[in-house]
Length: 153
Image (tube, rainbow, N blue to C red; front, side, top):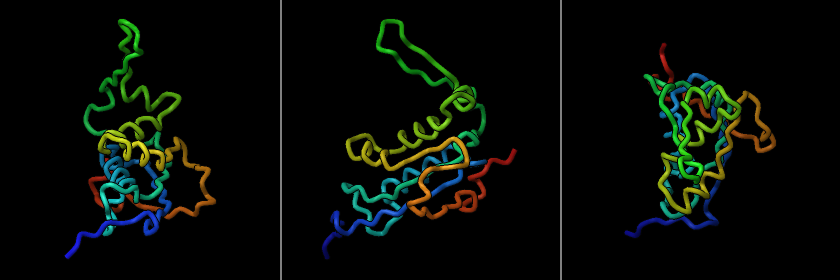
């Protein structure tokens, strides 16, 4: 019996749209990462880019559990003494709230050239509208997958 390995000609990419309103960030990011890698397909091949194209809408309405809204995110400018920080809550209320979802998904993918290529198949929009209607994406209901995916406040 031989191990199956997909070829580029056999790979089919779908378009999936996910509504992030009221969904817990970590659970959303793990589902998106699984879809981007293609692990939901029975023909999954680890060294091939066989995941779907994922569109996330309402990224500004994603939920965080516990005190994660107050957790600082650090980055360095490259200059001496250039460490900066901003809390996750400040980023969500700021100009680019979609960056929180992008960073969470990026950290759930393995590091490397293939993961950077797979991240290009993720489009995140802060509001309810997206510009990719021409691709005819299927809707993926993350809230209905598991009751823990939504935050009960």
